[in-house]
Image (cartoon, rainbow, N blue to C red):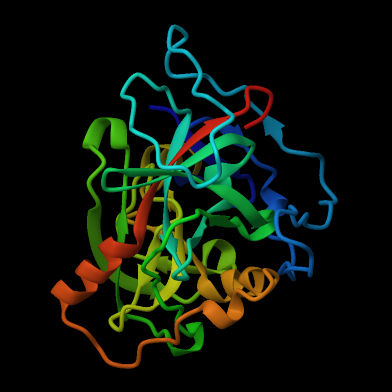
Length: 303
């Protein structure tokens, strides 16, 4: 399975976005641009970041998984439950998590970029999702399904410290590993990302293609970040001569909160942050109720 990759030409490091899908090379200076402030708009509009001063990204044409497999129907009703068809050939997958009781959820923008159809899968339910708002510069997206949901509370990044225990529930490579949720745990290794990017946490929570968009949870069960990328050991060795040891990144939840604030009336629906630490079994149980697999059918003329 091909992996979406981000080439950072500054320190000559290759970061692999944890998305099961297609290949794309992105201009390195887009990552180093100033913090994007989400703007007010109406639901369903794509929030565009300011144009980069460097040339546009070079895109590779995505490939379908099977040329003999018919395309899925594109006229499904928003939120309609659909039975899973093993013959359907989605072009990519990722993870998401609910933030409200009426079907709003967060994921990474690169998971649903140029998607013609998005399905949210939880157990035996498959619901068609609608894109409500996106923030490409911070790699974030808000989706919506017409179904009751169990939300995860959003935490305060200012309360996060080095060494804090964190975990995530995700759906890596569902075609190979299956569609059941997968748990990984670790610690916060840095309060900053690649090249001291203030938008990211660095963690030791192992992630794989398909984990993109999952909630990074603290010991209270609050989402403090959204899992996004990992340093690719083989490509980093080729470009820098050294092998990174379990270096992973998550977008801080504060940037997702800015995007959620642009959705009318959603702020009042978000549950308050949890303030009491929970045992591991309870954390995992609650996280599984909110985590969803995202299946994507992307357009053939974009990445």
